[in-house]
Amino acid sequence: MTYDVNYVTCPKCGHDRNSSTATKCEICGQSLKKGIGVPPIAVIAGVAALALLGAGAYFFLNKPTDMAVTSTSQTINANPVGSPVIKVYNDMETVENVPSGLFNYGGSTTFAPLRSLTISNAITQAHPNFQLRYVEPTTGKPGSSTGIKMLLDGQLSIAQSSRSVKDSEFTEAKTRGFTLEPVPIAIDGIAFFVTPSLAIAGLSLGQVEAIFTGKVTNWNQVGGPNLSIKPFSRDPQSGGTVTFIKDEILHGQALGRTVQITRDTTDEIRKVAQTPGAISYATASEVIGQQTIRSLPLSKAGTNYVAPFDGTGKINVTAFKNSSYPITRRLFVVMRRDGKLDEQAGAAYANLLLSGQGQKLIEQSGFVAIR
Image 1: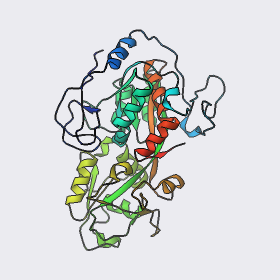
Image 2: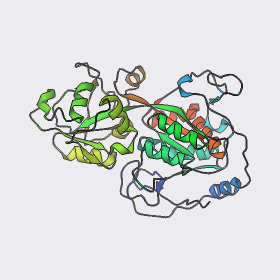
Image 3: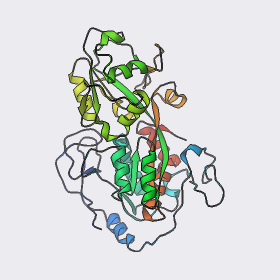
Image 4: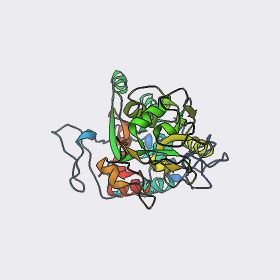
């Protein structure tokens, strides 16, 4: 198999894992010029090492709903002999069974901050021969659903998802002779945002549902000014964040006919900033620090609104952990359980992010540590 190790580094934020065909940085949206990256010696050595590795030693992962941390290098809720387990470590360097080679990963755009240069460098420094390459889909748009499909098709070694695996995806994997394992690695919140000048204190989840299904079309219907509501959303087919909103907030209803579809979060933010009465949503880590938009406090019902960010502009960690902020979810690393090298890579990647060092980097990226 031939690996393309060419990347484009963003001149604005320094993210060095943009695809060679990308026109915009997946982290900050900066316009990119196509360029050629230099394949590090470790990558070349890692690819060569693939030919020498057989089935190798690999380890399995515990069901995510059973996670309860004990202490360093102990297992999380160890099951009887033969059942999947996952170890936790203080730092990335001590993570065991990390394979050598170049492995494709991708999927949810929510994970973009976790594909940053800072995290990539930390993994490379701890395990130089374990190289990760971000891959965009050849057709369709990036997203959780696309990433899991690419994992099923063997195009990715590891999928990143902002939702758990669907029953239909578990079934498809089984028909192909393997299983999928979703491993939660972080807590995320979804933020709704509007133009800063819009005079409204917040929204309830019922009002959000009414807006995005087209039942409410003017801000004066939800306590705001007499102004038409202009909702924006990413394509429902992209999965992840959109699927979560559709399933959990819209209760399976389709987006209203007034909802305008955008390509990605960068496009959403730009259009909301430029459109009076606009509203959209995205993962909180992508909204934080944006000056051209204002995030809205939300409530489960009534007017007891809770903001996604605290007074210093950081993630409202307490509200995310105790669920007083009403829209939170877990982020998953999805791996193939087939007893082969991809499984070992997926397990290693999950353990790296679940290590003490990995969880600190996750918090620095705008998410909440899961342990």
